[in-house]
Every structure is written in structure tokens, then in C-alpha cells.
Image (cartoon, rainbow over all chains, first blue to last red; front, side, top):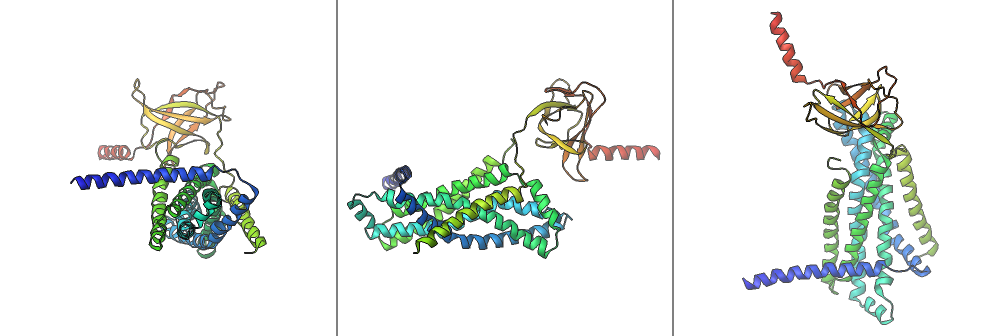
Length: 260
Length: 153
């Protein structure tokens, strides 16, 4: 019994210490004065984190938009109001689906890669040797990756929404024959830039922060063995996904929910 | 990796992302921004405000000019008090305007329709519209119909 209680206590304390460590890591790597060479490293990471995620985002956005168009059409045509399909596609995408799905894809595509990369750097003692040279790995390695994540996910989400809307257009208008004017017209009437588009972007920003933070911390603190790296990569994807979905509920409740 | 390709592709992603945001603003939301327009509050007392909730539209001649802020009970008259906010540029509602609760379509949402009267004086912030027409309650209507039907036999 005593053993059990001490086990629970130790686990809680360990968790708390981890959160503290993650916060220290975050602050130390965020608060860096940018120099010319660190900006160039940022561009390199933007390529790895952002540009290389572009294709998967484009393809999934197109298919999600098409599915929304198809589902919306079948559902709405039962009530004779298939003109509203544009509004449905756009609001679903902009408010909810593009930030969440893009963030989940981003966690799987970019977050896991970041964890594995930094974990391997740690396992092969590259981080330790940087420190030997007097270079802070938090500044050199972690900071550019963190900022690259924060910059690229909102951009990817904007692209995701737009491509999805055109995917819906492809199915609803070009295939199923909804009038193009009512597709765009209903959409433009229903979607508000501040309320819908910008709130979606705020969600994207929060998710980018969470994913980058979790991925980098898991990589930085992983056990420097092959099992450790694989466990850390798994944890990145699991924790990021849970954090995305949980925070999505909180943000949605704050932005759209409740009697206001 | 080729440095030029790296710079080019990152630039492409940033430009596409910002471009997509602009396109979302223009094409998808049609440039609709929720401006923090000036509003002024008025209220109206209804016998029955069934189905009306906050954020319902307030229209005049079919054009949206404001929205319902809250629906509550007026403790003195025991009627439904509907608080509305009207856009600041709609400052020509005469003091004898009437308000009615209407339904969009057969099963649609409830909204408030304003009809302007003939007086010179206009409604200002805090005024109360007294000439109102209540919401249509289907059950009452059916009850009335059945009563009349029974009488005529």
C-alpha cells in the first residue's frame, strides 16, 4: 500500500518536473535574438517542416472538400436546399476541419520527424558535442525548428481551406450541377472574415505552438536509445493529437459557443 | 541541397499561404468583416415571444438592421421584453413604429420585423416600442380553429 502511494506520488512529481523542464526549454529557445545565420537556419527548417508537408496537405484538402461537397449535397438535396452546400463546405472547413485535420497531419508528418531527428542527434551525442563547442543546442537546433512550425502551420491551414473550398466546388458545381453563383453567393453571405476565417487562423496558431512544443520536448528529453527514440516519436503523435482535439474544443467553446 | 531551390520553395510556400488567406477573405467571405458598427439599444414588449432568441435578426422592409440582444420578462407588465440593438445609421425609425415577430418560411427561424409609422419624432437609445404583434403560436391557432369549428356546427 505504502509502495503504491509512493509510486503515485513519484509519477505525479515526475510529470510536474517534465512540464517544468518543457517550459524552461520553450522559454530558453524562444527568447533568442535572431541573427543572419539563425534566420537562414529558419528558412531551412521552413523547407523541411512546411514545404515538405505541402503535398499531403493539398491532396487531403482536395479530398476532404470533395467529400464535404458530396455529403452536403446528398444531405441538403433531401430538403431541396442544395444551394446551401457552398455555405456548409466553407463554414465546416474554415471553422473546424482545416485547422484540426491540417494540425493532425502536421503532427504526423512534421512533428514526428522533428522528434526523431532531435532524438537521434541526442543519441549520437551531437547535441553534447555542440555544447562542448560552447554552442547552445537550444538556440542552434531547437529554436529554428520551433519558429518554423509556428510560421508554417497557419500558412498551410489557409491553403488547406482554400483548396478544400475548390474541392467542394468541383463536386457540387462541376459534377452535381449546383449553380455556381449560389455556391459562392451563399458562402460569401454566410462566412465572415473576422469571425470565421481569422478564428480558424488563431486555432492554427495555437495548434502549431502545441505541436512544435510537444515534438521538440519529446525529442530533446528522449532516452538516447533506439527504443527511446521510437517511444518518443509515438508519444509526440499521441500527445499532439490529444492536445489538438482537446484544445479545439476549448477554443471552439470560447469562439463560437455559449450564449453571447 | 541546392540553396536556390530551398529559398525558392520556401518563398513559394509563404506567398501561397498569404495568397490563400487573401483569397479566403475575398472569394470565400466576400470581404464580409464583422465591423464593430455603432448600435443603439431599443426594446419592445410582446404578449408572447415564443421562439425568439438572442442573435435573431431585426429587419425593416426585409433588410436586416440589427439583432436581438436578450429576451426576458418585464416584471411590471409581465410581458416578454425583447431587447434589440439597431445599427447606428438606421436613425429614422419613427416613435410610433410597430414591431412584430415573424417567421422565415414555414419552419424557419423567428425574427423581428419593424414597420415605420408616421410620426416626425424618431426612436432613440433606450426607447420602448409599444405597438407590437406577438409570435404566432401554432397550438393556440389550432385551438382557436377547433373552437370556431365546434361553434359553427
